[in-house]
Image (tube, rainbow, N blue to C red; front, side):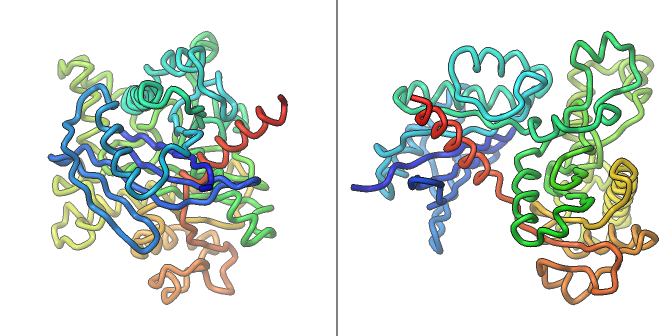
Length: 397
């Protein structure tokens, strides 16, 4: 008899990452991973199963109802796995607000609570809710669990969570939440496994991808994050602005007469590396370009990262190590070197050979601050949390 399976769904604004995990008695083990890309027509399902890579064109067209897309996706997966053995599904939910401090089993009350937070994450929350509903429709027998990106940062110090605004607004939920929590939870665990001494110290993790943020850890606990109320905050990203003087928004809405929708489009989709360069949102393309605008975008990106690291180091009361992760953090030595050079005054020194080779430790032996490159794995955290919630529920019966 084949083992039970668990699926994970990591919904972005333009894609869905899918993981296929085998469940044994005590843990989960990934068998395959895939991604549905909504930016291309026809829709494409990219799958990695061990050394094999598949690119599948889906016949179904993108729509608000994701059940047809998932039905076709499940049909393809059924050719390789016993889909009838899927007993659970775990979801990454971007925003848990102050409602959710950890993973929870999904029921109608959970769905309503997640939906109530949609205004705080308008790009990501609706997609996740559509996925949950689609799976309820296709496989009502399967248990679903939600893992929240904000939950890991519930330990942030109060000063880091508060804006200098009227207390009533803070009490109504306008505060700093932090995001990319599943990635940070994974890195905290991996650092503990690989280097327990470093994990016990003051560490800044740089999750640098299309969405990018920083997290300050002390003994593996999140005390501060660069992202705040929304996923716009903090350091510049592929198309998002990062920290911005609120007066700019007032100016856009007032004297310049832009609508809220136009301002949202500028800040979420036309800013960041794309906005500064006018060339591309992809840092790889900018690094290959000889145009001065490309260089300016990269310089601003690394300048803001280093500056935010220095701020978070003040929260931590020092800095012992930096971990680079996610697409840019794991694979782009130039970005890591440029950030580290701006922090050389703190005693950070990279080994250029190790950095160019993307080795795990990229700092020199004489560097006062250690620097590491660790691959993140949000899907593994989603799977582990789903397994944990359902295992505890079963044990309680």
